[in-house]
Image 1 (cartoon, rainbow, N blue to C red):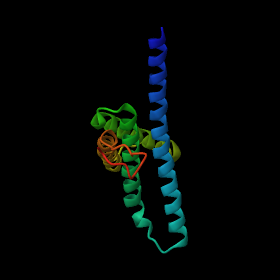
Image 2 (image 1 turned 120 degrees about the vertical axis):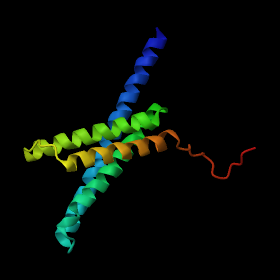
Image 3 (image 1 turned 90 degrees about the horizontal axis):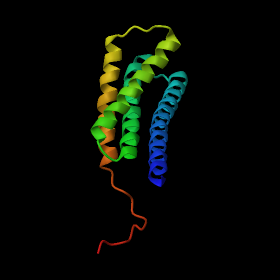
Image 4 (image 1 turned 30 degrees about the vertical axis):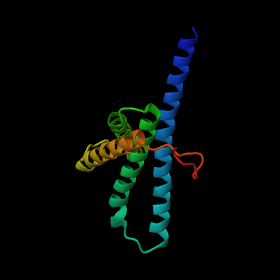
Length: 142
C-alpha cells in the first residue's frame, strides 16, 4: 500500500517540476521581451533586431525548459530536452497565433521549432549531467 502512495507522490512531484520548468521558461521569455521592448522604446535600437532577439530568446528559454525537465527526470536528457523544446515551441506558436489571429505556418515558425528543439536538447543534456553543489566549498575529497 505504501509503495503505491509513494509512486503517486513521485509522479505528482515530477509533473509539478515539469510545469515549473515551463513556467520558468515563459517567465524568462516575458522578462526578456519586456526589457527589449523598453530598449526599443527609449533607445535608437532598430526594429529590424526583433526577429534575432526573438529567436535568441526562444533558444534560451527552450534550453532552460529542457534543463529543468531533464533535471526533474534525472535521465534521458536528450529526450526530455527535445520534448521540452517542442512543447515550448508549440505553446509559443499557439499563443502568438491566438494573439494575432493568424494560424499560418511559415518558414519562421519552422525555424523557431528547430531552434527550440535543438536548444531544449542542449539544456536537457546539461540538466542530466549537471554537478551537484557541495555544501562546504572548503571540504576536500578524502
